[in-house]
Length: 136
Ligand code: CO
Image 1 (cartoon, rainbow, N blue to C red):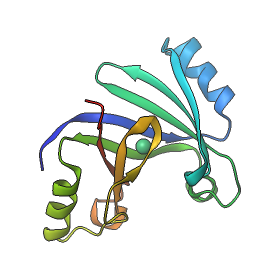
Image 2 (cartoon, rainbow, N blue to C red; image 1 turned 135 degrees about the horizontal axis):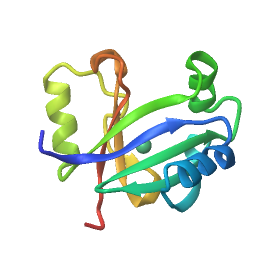
Image 3 (cartoon, rainbow, N blue to C red; image 1 turned 120 degrees about the horizontal axis):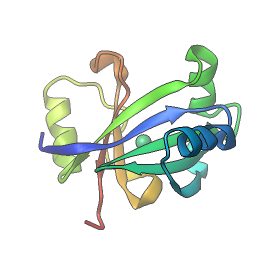
Image 4 (cartoon, rainbow, N blue to C red; image 1 turned 90 degrees about the vertical axis):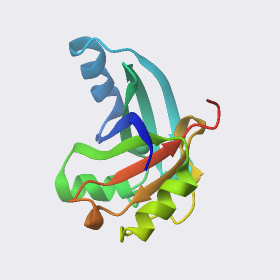
């Protein structure tokens, strides 16, 4: 699998405004985008740090997977996302190597990326996202 870098870390938060204040006022990062992703029932806020981003995820509905995550585990790191230049190839390789896929095919994510998730059962408990940026 040809991964280039950590594209982002996804962090589940109860309240986006409160979380943004921490990232801006304490860590000194700048929120450059707030985007609602209705298909995933989340509102996201993005920060850049080097080649990597932080993606804050606030649930917009009680049946959002992020709401269920927070209910079960509390706020915290939700997923790690790796950048790949061949998402279908990476998914095929993962499946061939016995990894359980959440997404068998790429689907649209925030920021115009194509994304797919690997099941945490196959990844030592870390929900893993693979991303391809079609605009690069
Ligand atoms: Co993500």
